Picture 1: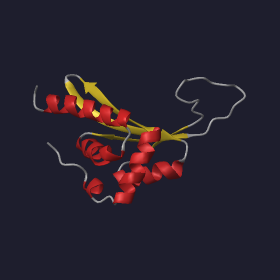
Picture 2: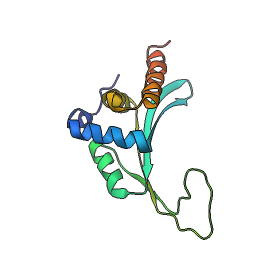
Picture 3: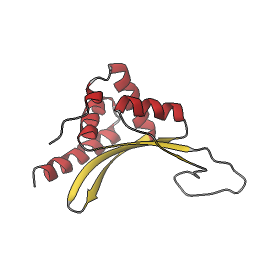
Length: 129
């Protein structure tokens, strides 16, 4: 198994708390399946490029986007409205497992339950069970 990103290991407690708060409000934790392999992921999307840049820098990731004129997550497009560009950072694999465990104590109950669920399935899949 790969080790978590060294970048993640160097985060200050302030950075960890900031990331946790941002992911609590704007991010998501998920479990993906590719063929028979299950792997955890985390994603955050927003229109504030400077905030997404800070997330990317802290997690050692690249920014995805901009996705021009994005109508939002519900796909409702208003012809009279101009939409801001959307930026995104995604994290998968061992790095996200470390990230989930690092921010866990800062998360609300719903996110904690989701992290526990993802890690339980991932650990079972990782051990061949």
